[in-house]
Image 1 (tube, rainbow, N blue to C red):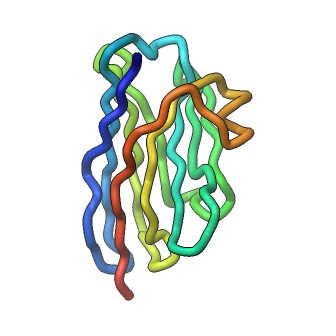
Image 2: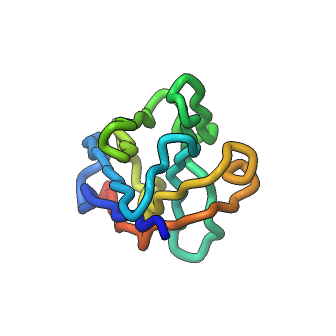
Length: 122
């Protein structure tokens, strides 16, 4: 059973940066895609970014393109989300997820993290 633990969230001002990390334990995720999803208050969960198992392919939702960057360190079973130029509308609980690229694009996953709060003030 893979467990995912996120870290790096917090409260920042608009324009600031944050880096989220997600460490997988209990099993290897080296052959799985990994993703970050987010859920803002009163809204449905949406995916923010996905990275393939090799790291060669990434995919972003339009609202974060050019500002967020997803990366992974396979040796450390870790995925990162570098968030720059943060906006108040980025405020949400961010979730790490693991699965195939295809199911992650369908807002599904084999494993989910518990989520971490990111709050951006104007």
